[in-house]
Length: 606
Image 1 (cartoon, rainbow, N blue to C red):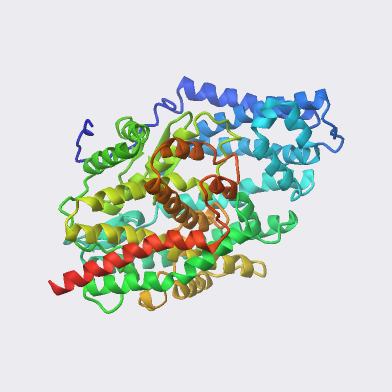
Image 2: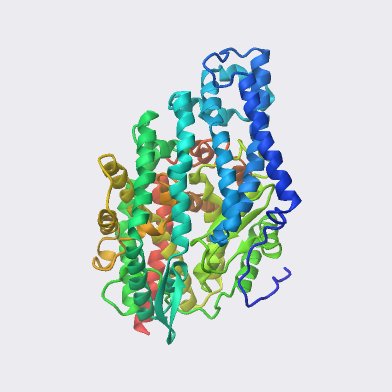
């Protein structure tokens, strides 16, 4: 295929295809029109008594007409809001000092609070209707049956209309405000560090990226600098976490959820049996991951890995994985699976969907956000390493998922996080296997190690995060926790999962301050493990029976907001409630560990 144009600079994404500027006519007109559409939707709800105590409980012609109109209007208003939000949050994510965008984002979120107040009204109304009769009476209702069925379940966990209305208002100055505070505050943390012969002030994201450097002294110094920076800024971040988790506990209790985990299970379209089967099976494989970490320590010439050795590169790669090289490799390997997938990736690179440069004011990590139609934007803090390329492939998988969802309405595309990781994991597997096929032994070692880094994070580290968040929610019921207590819970969770695989005196007690998902969601962690292991299982099916697979796979991705995880998995012959499936997926990771250990032994003999 035609190569991506090389460049020595990491790209910034182009948001002008969404809107040409905050003062431009297109943005101003869309914002005003959407604002009016929200008012019209509120009027529609009021006119038809949607959510009111005197709302009709029948499914006569008038009610069916109101239901059809409400579904159509909700889809339209939500999709338009998402485009505005994508533009504004995209500007802020790459420059938290963009005060003009911050101001518009605040306006948008205040208006979104009015829109959010309609959710419990709509949910309560659906909960009182004969949904089976409505599905039979209306094609539009039938097309949204799964979302409406979930609304009926959610209706059982609603407070009174006045309480739900108040909760939406208070969230603007409560949990949502604390979440924005964390994002802005953490993105602006900097620290001084001596690096390459000079002392520089670096953003925290750049310091964290030094964990990928080959020099152990640099990694150790970056680790110590990072921990000191988090310690200096821990108090306000701990305040944010206390506030967010405290609010979640209060609302969950008022809404009748037994625990925050029960709500997370519902939101992720899985049940307790599935989660227990996955987590329990994963725990049984922890010794295998510790075996990998011990083999890595031998390769590094140390007794035991410290936290700052988790991402240390090993082996040797002739390719430095410059951004343009990574782009070409990804597009080529995606093409071997599906021209549709490779075409989507090529568009992402050529149409400037990707913001890759780490810089001051830009948030850390990586994510992909839908920007309307079949388009997305991808944020990364790119490192010139195999891991950087693999992360890019992961996020492009999310973009492909968005592409497959393009024809779905807003309500139909509401994908739970468990299933949202399927395409991203699948794409990582594609590039990993392709890289391994032609690599010499030293490169195989490096590629396997980078992949096992990810697997260890997703299985072992995420298990520690589940333990951490469980303890935080439980203890937060009684009182606020100090930064030191958050650190102690995190350290205990890491000891419980990593065990003897890591030096117990050199863990990362401030991971609660590092991970932004703690500040925007509840139990964000386990869906990533589900995504990795489910993706491995789906990939195994592709390997065994490739004929006709791509069409089935795209249909699966297109349907992730229209069925439960169990039902979608069953369509692929998978029972996710039994340990057997998770064991088969984890066994594929053990094969990698075996191969890695054999390569380490070969390197030791050389």
